[in-house]
Length: 425
Image (tube, rainbow, N blue to C red; front, side):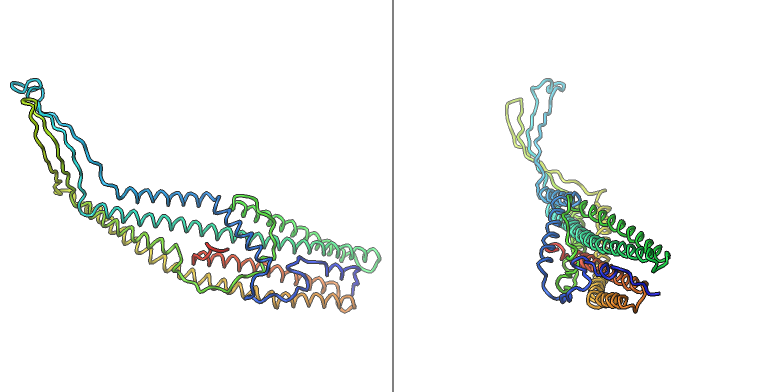
């Protein structure tokens, strides 16, 4: 039975969001420059990233650790302090040494002289550790930028989905009213009214869920940036940015961090070797003889004998830690190469999927929905065909939103791996 529902055609052609209208203009080429909307969206994202970098406690803690490592570099080059000594002999003895008559007082100055390159080795190890701490802070910063970009894309997608399902709810409400009017006029059965009412309730549930998802996505982004997030234009999802760069691991702080750790561990071996070399303490002083009031110069040298402690355990530990650091560097390099290959493929696939959906799938679904509506008005298609075509169009638009979101999140992951996400969003 063909059901000419009053007002259905107008409802089906109701205005969709500006970025996902029923019959949009052709999508710009993927290599086209950003529009003014995209530029403003990039500016908003840059502001969010800047705010997150200025307020995030995790980044501040990492920066504090890097600053603390600078103190180790300063301290590593400091010479040992000299020692002032005071020694009294021949005091309160017996016979000629009774009282203070034969007392001898020596005032001396002692200085530890480090041998074996201890000071230079300490400086090299502290410098490498400071470099590693700075790279650790860079990793935290890039992670934060990536997290903000991912959360930003999630909020844009949630806003776009909410707009789509709200339009779907409005369409379902208009359809339900039209079907109810047909039932009251006796042109249709109550089954169709129940079906339309069920579609409306489902659309309301989906709209409520989409609103909750958008609120949750906004709270997640606000938690990262440490403040409120202004209203965002979901049209930013459609701008895929410049062409995909050639990935490389050279700019990755994850690999550079382990290179710095290898350097620190090798410097630690030099430190432990230097510790096996005995240090020399030299001293000079003046001795005063109470009997006769004479004075004399006193010189001394103290040299430890490495009979028992040659720091073999410390050297062994430093060697093994160096081997561990080299293995970790090899692992990080392999993991980086694998992650880059996977991330590059994900970005390319997501970009192609979004392009195909925007240029072919969604326009075809729009044409099919329009043709079905026109055929329905002419009495060629039943009511269910119209609903199926419209649901197919809605599903295609939601899939397009998911593809845009997947692209932006995959691109954020790739930029994080290459270290390219720091300068620009």
